[in-house]
Length: 117
Length: 110
Image 1 (cartoon, helix red, strand yellow):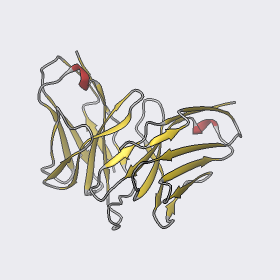
Image 2: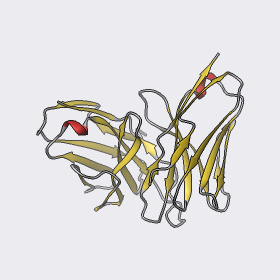
Image 3: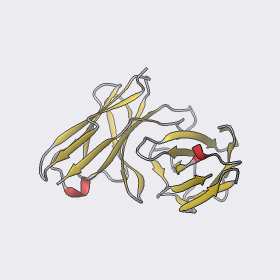
Image 4: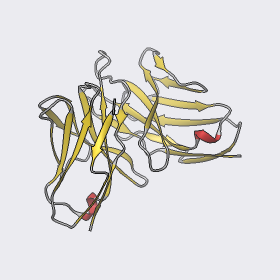
């Protein structure tokens, strides 16, 4: 099993360019998440999905869009990149425990380092 | 919404113990703990659920005080491999939003 994979690993964009980050998981997990990690800020939730065809906004959704057309894939899009979006992006997947509002461990991908000039 | 962790950083000698605290202003459904080494992805350590169920890790334990909305991670007899940044993560309501704390940098020296 590959677990959670992310494509690409590194990318440099110019301000105003667009791109899509791909996250794929082979564990049949229902839940998937996109986080960004900036120095001193920890991990902040951008968008998440609790199942195929569903998405929801997280803590910092502005400037990003997502889609979950297939259960195993979760795409993060930047329509018009800005320097403030320079960050490391992590995708994660998880599964529910059956208890209200409680998920088990999150499995993280290796991350994508994005620089916007 | 983001949980607050303390201390922000700690340096230990091998064999010493450490405690990392995580607190929230909102009621918690569960608390997760993760460790991240430099340049790598976070790795799950432990989950604590309301009512006391716990999934653990050897030599690392944790507590969850539901009334105080706090959790503490205990690392005993620290090893060099314990170095990294520790994050708590919490679910505050049933909407499946997940919030990570700002992290605690732990450095173990020989």
